[in-house]
Length: 144
Image (tube, rainbow, N blue to C red; front, side, top):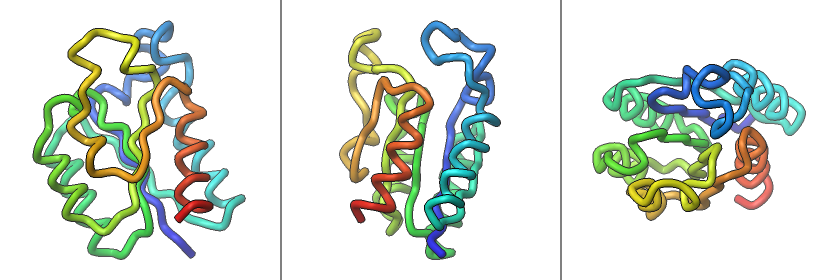
């Protein structure tokens, strides 16, 4: 059975409380539960992990790569625009990867328009709220 890592970065543990007009009202737990159930329905295991710490996210990518996970769904949060180290961890892994953003980062402040991560992933989904995670999982399983 394919294993997919579901990695969420800083402040995503605040979903449902943090700026719901931008990020929606779903909590991270609700998203994780939905995607885990969808994974089961599609015949894969989804392993969620969230951290506000860059090193913990990098360590998890390394762990999943070493354990031969098939893919990675990643919402890097604010690290999207600042973390070369996170980009390098993704590039060094053998994980098929999709970058997901709840909001449309291209319709927001100019500093959010540039992703350091996008160049090393297979696809980018932005602005679909929690549905972006659904699309990412389907993409990984159906297109790769």
